[in-house]
Image (cartoon, rainbow, N blue to C red; front, side):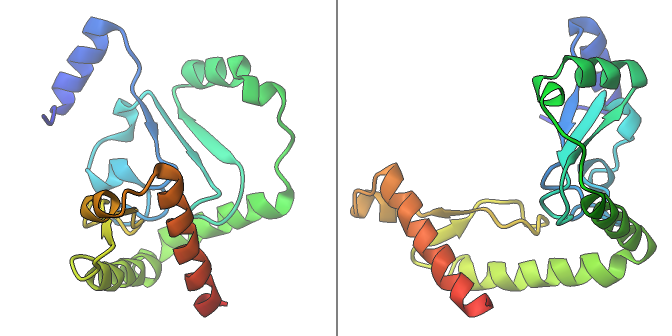
Length: 179
């Protein structure tokens, strides 16, 4: 069920909850300029109480972010165990994240369009042509989440550990070709 913005606000007020969105794998790849799921779904980000994410994924940097209302973010920051034991982010990673965001905002078509075309080509090679794996991510998502097909798991009685080892073998073999 998709809720309209008014329903979301009404539910938040009625049940006194906060809407927290993890943009770790959508920031930098979804939306017209790579601004993430809120941009992709055309949702005003101010309707989300807190948007969090890692800069290590699609932005190839490090660290993370927590954006939202100042009171909510401060509460999260101060009361987070991770904050207590964290160190400052190296300057090179901060610069990498900042420059990547600037590039995406200035010329999204240069980076986002080819990314989507590459993901589409990869998906066409895998799904439905592969006898072993299927892609479970949404068509518009360039992050391709692959799983071993159920019929393969059942036919070969693969345990979770067997599946993880098989997927690691695939990653290792692909890495040889990408090196």
